[in-house]
Structures are given as C-alpha cells and as structure tokens.
Amino acid sequence: MQYDIADILEVRDLNLFSRMKQETFEERVGTDRFFRITGTPADLGQVSADLEQPALLKLLEKPPNPHGRSGGWDVRPLPPLKRFENQRTEFHHMKFVKNGHLEFWTAIDQYFCWQQDPVEMKTHPRRYPYPVVEHPLSFLRLYRASADFLQIHSDILFQMQYLNIISARMTSGYVEQRDGGHYIARVSLDSIVYAFRGGESPETIQ
Image 1 (tube, helix red, strand yellow):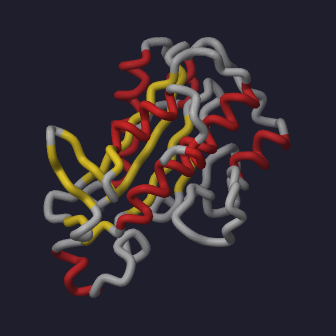
Image 2 (cartoon, rainbow, N blue to C red; image 1 turned 135 degrees about the horizontal axis):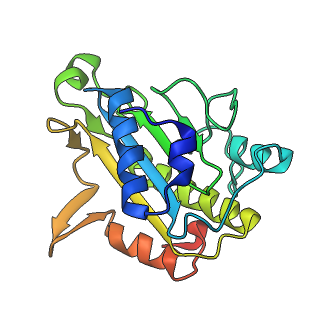
C-alpha cells in the first residue's frame, strides 16, 4: 500500500511507521528478490531535516568511503537523488525521510550474485559474501555520519532483510550456522551490530 508522505511524517509510533514503510517496499518490488536495510530513529519527532541543505544531499549521494574505493558493494545511490530518493528501484535505491529514516534497497541480481551462471541464478541465486557484508557496513557508516550531521540522539532501529529468496543460497565456505547464530568468515553477524551500537566505527569492527 502506498502512503502519502504527509501521513507518514505524522506518525510517531515506531512500529506503525516501520510497518507502513515495509508495506510500501513490498508493494514496489512485488515478487522480485531484494535486499533491504533501514535505519529509523526511535524518537520520530526529534528531527525534521531541512531537505534543502546541500551538505545533507552531498552526504547521501557520496557516503563515507574510508578506503577510497571507486567500486564495490557500497550504498551509493544511482543518481539523480531527487527529493532525497532516486527513481530506479532495482539497483542501489535510496530513500531518506526528513524524520531521519533512511533505507537502501538493491535487487538480488548478477551483481549481488557475482560470477554466478545466469541460468543457475534464475532458480537458485547464490549470494556473494562481499555484498552480504559490505552493504550493511557501508549503510551503518552512512547512517552514523547522517545521525551526527542531524544531531540524532535517540536510539536507532536498524532492520535488514532479504525478500523472496526461499531458493537462494550462500557461497559455501563463508557462512556457518552454529549455536543459534550465523557467522561470516568466523565473525558473528550479531557481533557486528553490537559493536556498532557500542560505539565502534564500521571500519574498525573486526
């Protein structure tokens, strides 16, 4: 269901807001396979960003890139970012809302399934480990920078999901499931989030 932006901005309940954004996302992507990650302030009334600020737009268009890479699996949106959202949804889609909510989507496609046979990808897409790890870290890095810029002081709700990937696989040798958790190259996914919440910057998390 598509919601009017004015109605969305009136919402102060975090669960209701998240559900409205989730419904909008699912309606727009349909049955296609997608990755999505979001960050939302717990206090939805604290911030009302000025969408005319060139510095904010520049930050979102060119997220922090401490390694100076010209490519890779980051969260740079495809230009142009008009009214803080780009129009293409299938690749590096970004949406910023003036209450501090930020989301990033990208399809589980030939870039996410790097070097996979196209025929096999149609039935059993294989998620390449680099986008699985680097998209979330790049997003956390960007959100921290935008939260500092907007002076967001409340807790942040981060949500990450893969949609419509029942038949998808993970490249063997990189991901293990044990003790009720998932590990990538021997690092717990939960530990990445806990380290970020504890104040560590994304590039220093080991």
